[in-house]
Each structure stands twice: as C-alpha cells, then as structure tokens.
Image (cartoon, rainbow, N blue to C red; front, side):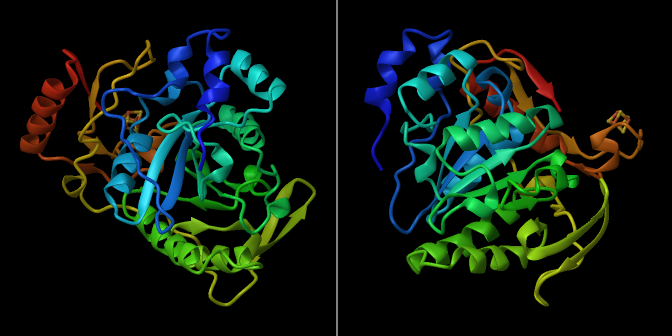
Length: 315
Ligand code: SF4
C-alpha cells in the first residue's frame, strides 16, 4: 500500500490544526503490514479532538496490534477544511500511522458512540472511496463494521454497514480477525464477500443485516427472519466476564493538540447497577464488572509515569 503523505503534506499548511492529521503521538503504534495480516482501520467518526480520547478505540488498537495476524491504524473525521482539500485534489481518507488510503484496508471499523455521528460515518466511507451502500461494495472492498453503544439500535444504518458488533469488543475483535484472516489466505476470491459475511454472522455478537429478511409496516419494523439456518435469529451482546483480564489501554495515546479529555483514563468498572433509564452504563453495559483496587493502582501509577500526565480520571 502506498502512502498518501506526499499528496497530504502540502495541504496541511492550509488547514486548521494540522496536528490532527500527522499521527506520531506517544503511544502510537508502528504497524507493519503483511499479506497475511488483517488490516483494520479503526475510525472514530468525529474530529481528532473528540475521537482520540475514546477508550474503546484505544483498547482495540492495542489488542489488534498485539496479534500476529492483524495490524490496526487509526483515522478520525477530517474537519471541513481538510475535507474540501481532499475532495478537490482527490486524496482519499487516510490512516494516521502510515498515511495509507482508507480504502486499502480490509476493515473500516467505526466506533459509534452517538447518533449524531451517523452522517459522519457515511461521509468517511465516501471519503475513503468506498461505496456508501453495502449492497454496492465489490468483493475486495473493505468491510464496514460498526461497534459501540449505538449498535444496539442498528437498523438506521443497516443499509450502509456490513456488520454490527454488539457489546464488549475485547474478545470478539479477535474472533472476527480469525474469520477475515482465513478469507485473506484464500485470496478473497470472486463472489466470496457474501460467504465471509455469513461466517461473520455466526460469530456471537455480530449482526450482519444482509443475512436477514426484514419486513416493515410503514416506518415500523415488524419482523426479521434469518436467510440461512446457520444465522442466529437473535443476536446477543458480547460481555467480558472480568475487566481484570483486560488491563487496556496499557499505553494511552497522548494527543498532539488539545482534546476534549486530556488526562489519563483508567476504567475502574464497567456497567452500573442503578439502572437510570437514560443511561448507557445503567441499561446496556450491565452487568457491573469491577477492576481490583490493586490493578487500578498499578494502572494509574504506570500510566502517569509513562504519559507524563499529572491528572487521572477513574471512569
Ligand atoms: S446515571 Fe448511569 S452511571 Fe450514574 S447511577 Fe445512573 S445508571 Fe449508574
């Protein structure tokens, strides 16, 4: 894959906050691509300032880059000034680490934390040079996958996303990688996209809209039936049983410019027993899983030392 850096660099002097687009942060990985490695582009469909602190993306970034059969880079939605430059000069959306074209990755994996970013997701897919509608994507086009809290209500984006992942991503991201690694080893043969999506649909927690017949009555969804016997009628969210087994991120990204959450983050528990109806933690990320005080102390001490931050948020 060839870098877009020679095309991008001359444009950076014309846009606000070019530091958003250069990568090189402390904590950034240096992924080395190879034909047998599944190339993930982890995208946060909002600006660098909003997306960089996201813990979910940073956790998956480390887990994937620790695997022998995967690499993961990052991308964030460009601000409108850079988007205009990219569109005018026909430069595709790119990754931050190696500045590779987004459309050359095997997976465009979006973190959907808020409904307000849905249109940014569509825009990022378009900027990547990938057809926006899933049904128009060729066999070798990247798979567009979405995870995060909004995927509990996936239907608004069902025409545009190849697969949704419900629940905690720590385990399922590896299971998806194993399916896709097999697809890559086979050379992604013609006509195989539907087969690999069907394989993904069999992974617990993965919802593949194209594997279901969906019936609406006006705007209301009234029925969904799997198209094949090996596709589950009910997709259940993934839940890791212990946060202790996943002490991530180990090496938090330190932004190059001011971001919305500019301090060390350590997740002390996930889920909440209180059950306030408006709250994601109380309603969809149950059950409560607590990290031990000892592990929290270790993560805080190591994180402060490595990052240079003098503040920590216990999330
Ligand atoms: S708002 Fe959410 S995190 Fe806070 S007590 Fe209610 S359910 Fe728990």
